[in-house]
Image 1 (cartoon, rainbow, N blue to C red):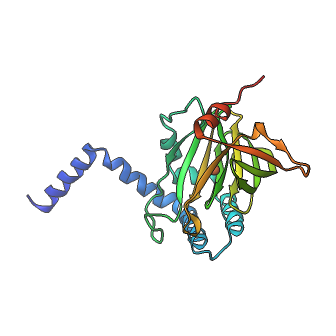
Image 2: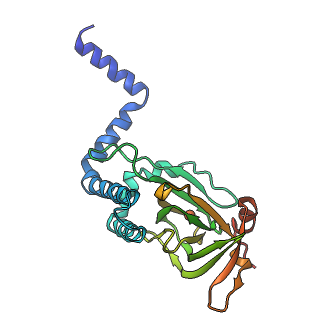
Image 3: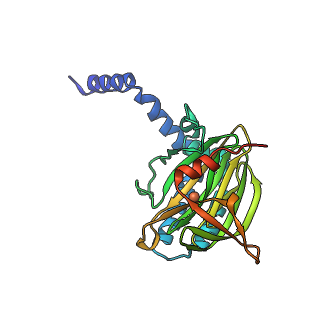
Length: 251
Ligand SMILES: [Fe+2]
């Protein structure tokens, strides 16, 4: 078989496996999306590496990532992560949310394994990312679709089976808006979808300072008011928490 015949045969084989379409897609991304998102994705990874090395503080990371989220045209990001494909046949649970792993296109200057975990979170109306706090991790969340009621609290300390918290944010957020958590600032979050469906894009860094991360599901409706405006809230196991907070009921 000469080279040309071989090439034609290979191309046919590629097409028969549907690979040509994905090759052309990669090409299209390279041509139209890359200039903005390439720089953006590398910067995102750099800030996450800086946080891992403690070259920046967690609160610096929070504000840098949120301004990066603010700077990227949403349409470019949606194409970059192939949002359309990710939400195709998305499995919306009756309680709480579902997630899908996000893959970035291959880029020069971006390691295949990024310094962060990247996912989308999706949910139906009235479903929640149930209220929870975190230890030894940071994350940032950008609304890709829909509207959500978002509440945040500072973690003032975990004691026995409860956490002392201070309310910091309570607002409705929509497409293009973001929030973030860390051990230092806005540690507890709670999202409830107010639109038919809602999606966030999430950047997560686990096991900061080489300590294992932890998540505390919180029973905020059972809060004990403190004299200073803070609350003490019980810590729940995940099943109990999902039953109570996974789906908001309206009375
Ligand atoms: Fe979280």
